[in-house]
Length: 106
Length: 331
Image (tube, rainbow over all chains, first blue to last red):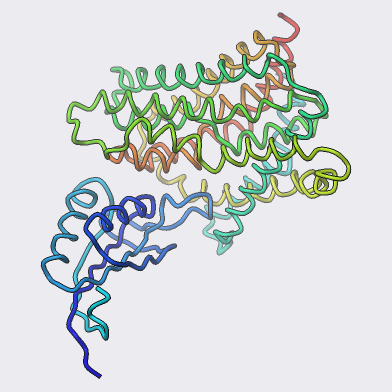
């Protein structure tokens, strides 16, 4: 089986801005993404955890996007960083090298 | 205020379950209400209030008081947010515009769980209220949130600070929020299907379970409130005082308004404490986090949830009850 190199951008941030991040990803022309919800963790802003189902304020989401090229991956990370993570919201974004079966999907 | 009313409010199942939740959080018990269960109970309580209001409205009918109530609720929402913002940015409290707007918005907005408890209290003392009053929720809530956000944005010199959420979007969010949909939508469903062959068959589910679920749900809220108590240590004492006094001011202003627009003592009480007195800790934090990201989310949330809510459970609800009865005698 032949595998093609691709890039995975991971964004872990506040659940309240999930929709806004997705909107930004769509504007960047991504073809798909995966969202993990109800996440907790610790970072510069202390421990973040849920509020007993009252609301999603304290929760994190993890959004994964696979793209074909490094350039598009950088553009996505810069946009997410500039719009959300630089000062306003808790979160991180990082890049992973991966290999995929069907490169045309990304 | 009679001692009995306070006792009745303190030694009620919802208040004691709230206290138990706080205690469990403070002693770091492993007690936890699963997120999905907490969310489901919240949805059930709002639906129950809406549906039962709809059935009651179909029996009692509506009059001009609804329109007067909607106008009054909107004006009070704007007034609460405006007063709160100006007080909090004044030299006395000296909060920055973003935090002042966020706190003023939380306190001007409606706490759906205080609304639930005010309705539960009236049922306990067997007092009737105009069934449409809880459905005035979106008017006051949206008016207060939008006003507070606009004031805060105007106050922030750097306009790039905003998150690009427009006023139109804010209004749309307020009017499509789950609380609004459940309260107003439930009321319509209850109204349209009232009767033994319709809602009559589903009503026992909403009627019988309401008080029990309200009591049990307070355990969840107590757990979350208890976990935030430690955050209060960092809060300015004057701002803490604001969180205790402002609900009282809102209750008195709204009780007077409710009486003047001709609500019964029960309806006035729901208007005063259920809508005006509470500080929102479920819907407002999300709205503020997206609309005013510069504000510290745990400041407003801990004030609303760990100060205003318990204070209202103990003092606000019985006080609003007594004030409403007193005002009905005066006017």
